[in-house]
Length: 54
Image (cartoon, rainbow, N blue to C red; front, side):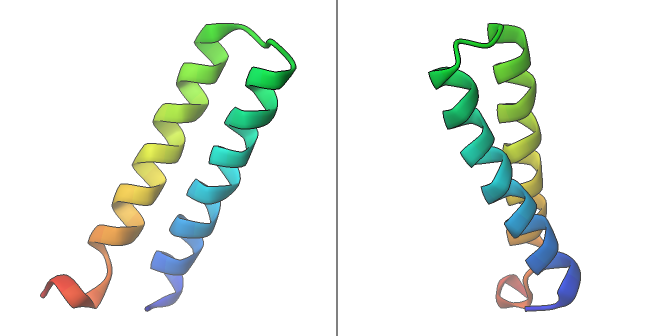
């Protein structure tokens, strides 16, 4: 794993934890959707940058 992939995956997982917290606090659904989209983008970008796909 290179450094950027690791950072993207960690940020994506952190945002997933934020989604859980936002749902429990009943935050606006638009904000939850935005954070979910950001988490998905970070996780996908981190996984695609891994060298195992080459």
